[in-house]
Image (tube, rainbow, N blue to C red):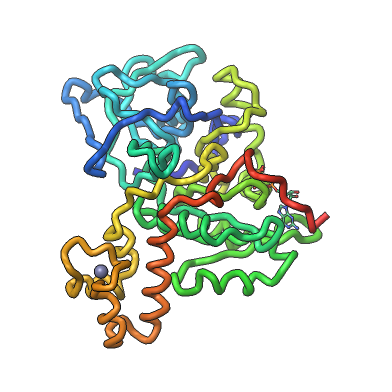
Length: 369
Ligand SMILES: Nc1nc2c(ncn2[C@@H]2O[C@H](COP(=O)(O)OP(=O)(O)OP(=O)(O)O)[C@@H](O)[C@H]2O)c(=O)[nH]1
Ligand SMILES: [Zn+2]
């Protein structure tokens, strides 16, 4: 199934990429102690269900794009059928809908199926919260937005985003903003050992420079944007999706919410195909429960060295076999740096004050004014 809607002349821009208000109450709690994949409930009784793509979730209502890319494309408001149990619907979910799927105002369809998620971005309220909450489903890429200056990059926070990307099955992309304030190379070195793809944007005389490079990475894929306040994420989203504000207004007209609430999450259709999901409501990821193993899988050069490890190795202990593996040169010339970087990510799983991002943080001192 195609994941992106091309510009459709039959629809207003708002209908292509609605953006709804999202807050913590909308996140369904589903304990998932095994960290297993969410279940898919395929009910033969609903063989007639139509497919939808969840573009926004607001107060228990999902806004689903139906007939994507066809003249019948529409946004259908829906609620979860009781038979789904406690399983929550999140932005990015592929669902099956029954009932009134006309998309006519004031109608409400029922979601009777949630397709198995290819990827699931999770977070918890804090690192000690044992309950995992999926916040975005099926995204391909996690775009970690950080400024080269003003505010100063928070490397630990970026590291945490990388862990979140690796364990959720999403490809990370580093997006450095405000490249006009300082050479991006000074910052890029911090993440060089991870072999990340990176793009740099800066303020130019006629808008953002580097936008074409960003677009190229986003085209035809679903990307989640994360970054703390002030890094220029809104500036970037508005440049990528010129009618983002109108899209926001559209969904708020449907949901009756004011448009200036502090948290919102929705998938916005990119003009060239693909989706961006902004995450203003997400202040961090709960990573304390992330298995070292899951992080190690992002380091294919180190992974085979695990054979030398004692059972249940945390990979951060004296007996860890990875040290020997690297010392023998089996992970290549960059082995030592890679191992240190891997351990840096392991350490970043642990909570720290720095992770309290969002409205509570002290204001940054403007240097670009
Ligand atoms: N110098 C410079 N400033 C920028 C650039 N991009 C954005 N800014 C400025 O940085 C400030 C923050 O930008 P926003 O886009 O509001 O940042 P945000 O990450 O969305 O922040 P919140 O809305 O607080 O989440 C604004 O004053 C922008 O004008 C850039 O490339 N260069
Ligand atoms: Zn080990």
